Image (cartoon, rainbow, N blue to C red; front, side, top):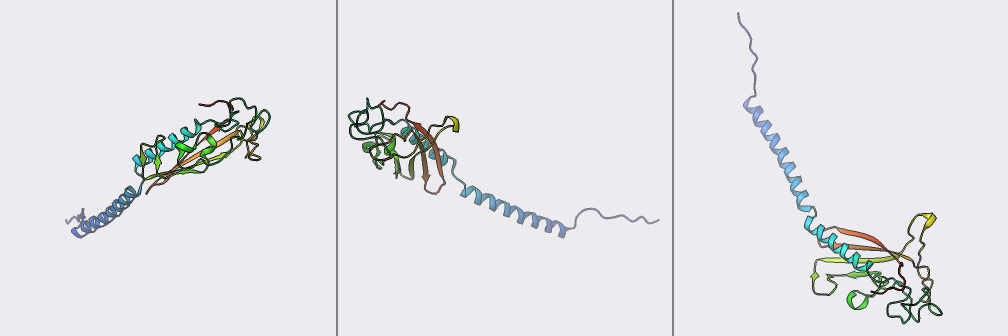
Length: 196
């Protein structure tokens, strides 16, 4: 009696072909992972961008938002954001860029409108982040649900800002070779006669 036995296992050629296919696939996967890791944002840079954006947002939110410009003679006693009786002596607080030299030119929230910091410096000017830029926008925006909304719109004129009640502040920080991060916050005219 002759019993036929089937062979089990792989031939040498089948094994070599299998190793070759797996090697090619592994090289392809490793190449994709390498490119992805190299082009992904550095977590330290992203964290630094977020920290810078939050610090600038807080700086802007802490500025006075009064009826009158802080240098106006009636800033502490004005009853409205107009010039004349019961209002400001000469200058209402509106939206006007204070300029990139924020230390010398910004003394209220409105002065930060359309300011770009390139490079980003510390408030006192002693530190600089050369590879970072920050763009600040300050725009009037309504706040709250429709039934109890605080309305806000641009000043009617240079002497009448009674409709400017809420500001949306957006700070966008960019780093060379990375994406950008935007943080937003609001500032209301809750204490129209308070100065720091």
